[in-house]
Image (cartoon, rainbow, N blue to C red; front, side, top):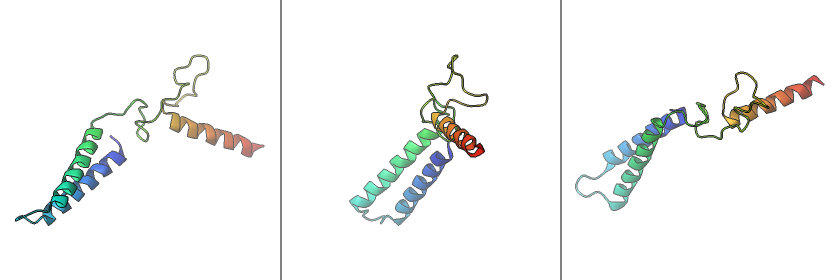
Length: 104
């Protein structure tokens, strides 16, 4: 479960609630019913994403990101403490390269 998934669920539920309470009980307009249905679909999708687990990367920040192709490579292993997330590992590589350049 990621923070973005939780915020999306909260936003969709809040939107659905606002629409539902503003409906005219006597005769809701068709476009209002469609808006409510779309907000509920968003909420349903966000709720499903909460239970999806950590994803292939195991990364809380990028659960559906790409897996680093060097992860598990015995010939060219990743440094200790690095995970499977390509995005996080790329950020680490760039930071290490920038740090080496600044030492020169």
